[in-house]
Length: 206
Image 1 (cartoon, helix red, strand yellow):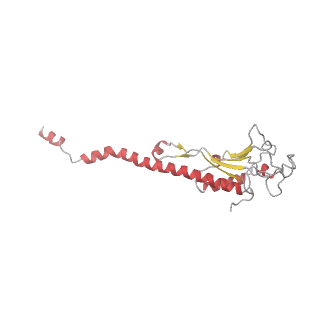
Image 2 (spheres, rainbow, N blue to C red):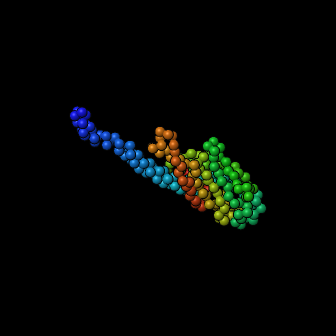
Image 3 (tube, rainbow, N blue to C red):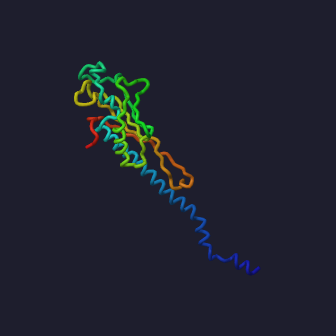
């Protein structure tokens, strides 16, 4: 009995036992801090990516190529030099399913000028955005051209309209370290940025 009492009263391994008990909580706290930092970093990089994408989009070829090449004076019946009204052009959005790039107009305001998409122009914009956040895929990017009241019908030097170009990101996720064993992921908030079209021509933004 005396030997058992002596054994139970020994404390040499107490520190090790306490460490083993606290280690899981400490690791959870440590990796939680890392994941929080990674999350904020990814959110910031997504916002920067949309800014870069919009800046590139307004200075290079329009993805909505039919809009870029359409003459509202010749084909749209709008007086040469007049502002293209919103009734003739409201908006057109371009995106990708990961394979095919398409453009479409709202059902309430169909495109009389067509919906052909310039896939190469779209992918150049995506490539520029990937410089900020490499996890961006084609299907995460939507480029919307919206009426601004700028430009004029029959412009001989470029597109008849100078729309507001909105570049947005959707469906981005991040895999936290803590969720790695379970294959989990958390969604990043959507991000978008808008600028007014400049020349809308070319393949390189200066």
